[in-house]
Image (cartoon, rainbow, N blue to C red; front, side):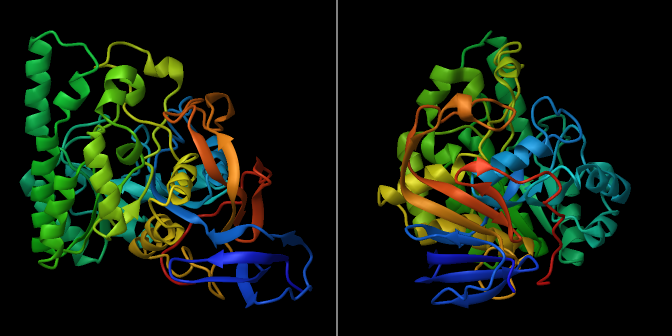
Length: 446
């Protein structure tokens, strides 16, 4: 007998679409059939709904342990489930994982606090060089590296960065790189402060396109020279994609990652909203956003993530525009925003699945356990009502942030069910899962 059977669904992956049923046993997809097998403890009639693999968000910050007034794993994972995300890869700047001891401590702390599956990213500080393999062997999903001093995390200079890439490459590890040139952002900050600038426009001038471009060109070249597997985090404009593609065509093993804020927000939003539009790199122009969407569709950008980094409204209003926290909430709203694009015929649902589920799972080494619908895969599934009309509202946000940059956006398309290894955690749009359902993910197919 199966534990769960999902009947009469339109089943969709990045490459296939068919009407059928999914049967689940012991957390795995046990059968895929054209008609119901009617031999399960629990049933979902998915007639009129689309069944897709759960989203894999490789870049979130749940601040747990650490600044849990901003977010924690309980609220963050509930927000993820509401957004159709079944696996997250998390790191927090306030309590960085930097060695096996802190990795084990964090796993113990959060193992009963999540309703979705999770992996962890480790920060790399200059003093960690030469000591990274034990963390990889223990189960870290990626190493996070900064080319600028941000969030209190120190930058890597070129010598350190090259050595880190060589080390990670030596054991076939992978890394996620925040690319902004430290000397340029420092110089911009100095000049803007000397000019007594405290207006919202400083965000784009401080964290300039040039700072990102120079760092990406540098990182992508080093990645090719060292053969390291690297992902360029939160691409903000098309030139960055071109720089990545240049090295990809020469054999670099790198991915480009984009976040929804670079598709849906722009420089005018920054001017109008200041602290609530402070993230880095910042949003650019409307025209650049449109080009980025085209680059997603032609495969030039491979991964979508949220960089979910919430702060509450009161925290965003603390101090000047220089002082308030960077970051936006997003794990709850990203898939719905993309579904809106699907209904507007600006992108296909197959492309969204590839971008936000399949390719991240492959990059993380957890495919086909995650990111697909096939017999033997984890039963991480999302049922969508593509005709459901609703509006994103701050008052309904689950994240501890309590707000969204997309407040007031009218959406068509919504996750109604989110299922994590056969456990229903979102039912008819309501969270029903209990913390502890989510488990640590491990690389490999089993």
